[in-house]
Image (cartoon, rainbow over all chains, first blue to last red; front, side):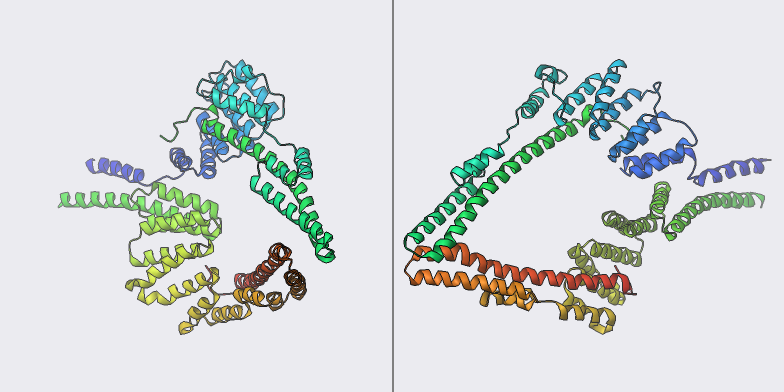
Amino acid sequence: MKIFIIQIIISTVVLAQSVDFNSPENIKLFADYLFCDHDYLRAIDEYEKYLNFFDNDTIRFKIALAFSLMDEHTNALKNFNKLSEASQLYQLSQIEELKSFFKLKLFPQLSSKVSEIHNLKSEYSLSADKILSISYLLNNYSIPAEKLFLAPFNDQEKPIVQNFYLRKTNPDYKSEILAGVYSAIIPGLGKIYTENYSDGITAFLITGIFSYLAYTNFEHRHLTRAWIFTVAGAGFYAGNIYGSVASAQIFNVKINFDFINDVNSFIEAKNYFIPEYDFCK
Amino acid sequence: MISVNRKIFVILIVLSGYCSAQNSLKDQFDFAKSLFDQEKYFDAITEFKRLLFFDKENLYGFDANLMIGLSYKAGAKYNDALKYFSLSEMHTKNDEQFFNASILSARTNILRRTTLQSEKILNSLLANSKYDNRKKEIKYWLGWNYIFSNQWEEASEIFSEENLDTTLADICKSVVDDLYNENFAKYSSYIFPGFGQFYTGEYLNGLISLGWNVLFGYLTINSFAEERVFDGIMIANFLWLRFYGGNTRNAEKFAKEKNLIVTNNALDWLQYNFKGSKP
């Protein structure tokens, strides 16, 4: 009898020692490991396998989050949408949806989602307002008045966001026409206007020298050289006008690029005003 | 007597439990390996990672990491492949395993064009007396490393050593013969404008280059001869030197472009027609 009991106990231990890789618990453990190892695509596959056994809102949320972290926001939105209102993670999923709308540049949807979040009386309403304000900096809709725009931000954030607001409402562009006209009047002036100082001075000197050489060679009847200097001088003159217009365009593109870059860096650094998760702690 | 039998019985059951755990890991390894053999690399990586996750005693630390590295390599994810080859190196149990992992690291670095890194790995293996009997193999990959670092002459020499691979040696030799000398193209154009272009078969460009240089050279000399020194300096500086310098750079550029075509054709042939081992 004793031997029989021992045999039963030991055989149970034996079974326990063999790993069941496909048990729901092990699938979840492995998926969590993959998620924290930033191997999101595989983590999603494993979480979906787990959902075949048990329905779990946290797992659904993690799937959506994994898509979001891979910058696959269309899929992220689909999965965040699957969370029921009863879920504890529902409010977070709403703010995550905002982030996805922001990343996808779907500003009308973002705006209506902010209203939904307000209706929910969510604890993330303020974060939603902040994202909405920032979104005005990157879209072409008319931006609200400064006071209203800055209202959601705290004292630490306000000076930075105010600077963005001023750069959006009053960008430091250079006029392409003015740059061209300046260079037509005084070669190089258009380049100096677009803050391209060395090019401006070089263009002024070269056009001036070639003009002088053309003049003096015509004066002394050295016609071949005179025409060469005339063609070269005219080429530099026309090229400088074109170059000044292009320089103004490049200047303006850089202004836009820097602005978008700065805004995106700011909101990335703030993690889209979403709290950090402790899934991997 | 009965007591001894009981003890043996218990030991056998415990051992069989241990074996059973090992068997399940082995089954998982075999399953992942079968996915790899079917070229289902994404799934293979998942299953090898699963194996590593549950293999608490690191029994498969070398093999599974190596297979993950191979799967990533097959999917051209060279950075990930190198990470896992390095992990497999950390789990080697003997010199043979270390050698295999190092060679795979070197081959991946060759494909990734980080040839200095692969050269370092291969030279350290070559300097290790433990691998004296594998020198041929190391040199073979060193030859490939030379090919990918555009050193075809060195590649030809190493493949010729002890008849390491005569096919590869011949190919590298023919590439060396077909390559244009970039320095010759450049410096010959310094001496005679347009010559480098003629050398690379760009006759029209050579003639145009020669024409511009003759014209502006003449005008410069003519200006000095007529004692219009400032005119001469300006023509020389802004026109003649511009075309003279451009002519040499142009000749070098043509030589580089032609060489790129030659080497790319050779690499193309090696990729699709060469039957031997490739990185």
